[in-house]
Length: 155
Image (cartoon, rainbow, N blue to C red):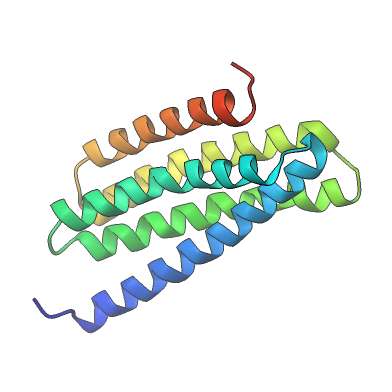
């Protein structure tokens, strides 16, 4: 199956968005580690958990979606990117010690809420079933649970 020019553009967009999201998320975790004293292993685990929910969606889209796969993947990559960008204000405020502990949590909550809305929009505009959204919400809930138990030791 040949890749169309539009698909090539969508693939490139997805790669750029997911790459930038990974860099931004790592930077956010790095800023949080300065505040919460995470070691390198916990930082890597935290980033891996965050990325796994996206990897599951990409893998499922690649396997299950046909002609809609690249539109969908590009859309969710943009959602991921915006969610990561919402984390940046914490890094700026943590450098200046403006909102130490609360900024971390506020940024996380704001990013999750924004991604919940944007992911739903991504699903609808891609023309795929709302079941994709529900699967992502389930992945998000699992990821948050893992972050709170394994990384942060809160639960």
